[in-house]
Length: 130
Image (cartoon, rainbow, N blue to C red; front, side, top):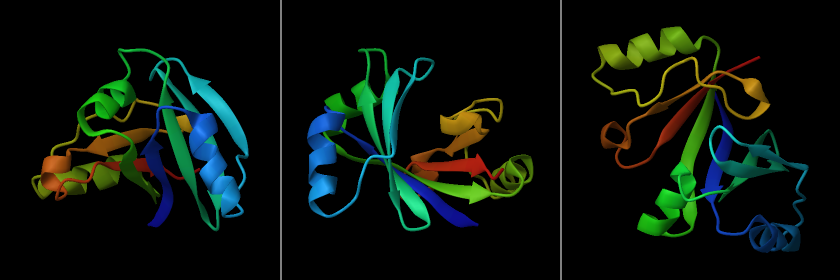
């Protein structure tokens, strides 16, 4: 399992991206995921990446996160070879899964989220490799 990305909730991708440019990182692309109500700016960082997450409406999970907690780390994402198998393993250990495997994230990959109540307060996303 490898770190895929760190998702950071921001009010403005343009403002947040300027900080990353100062340290030498560059936005590779920005995409809009209408189903999730979010714009995503992808910033490569070594073997993984940073994803800046900007809400595109008040119904967005990111908008709600910003209202409750402000800007900052929203989730940490790990690549797994077999998402179904990993979710079964986690459920067997008592973890609560927030989303279903049919959900699709950036790059149309299958994703699921583990309830932060079971991960010491950190939202963990799992994404199927490939």
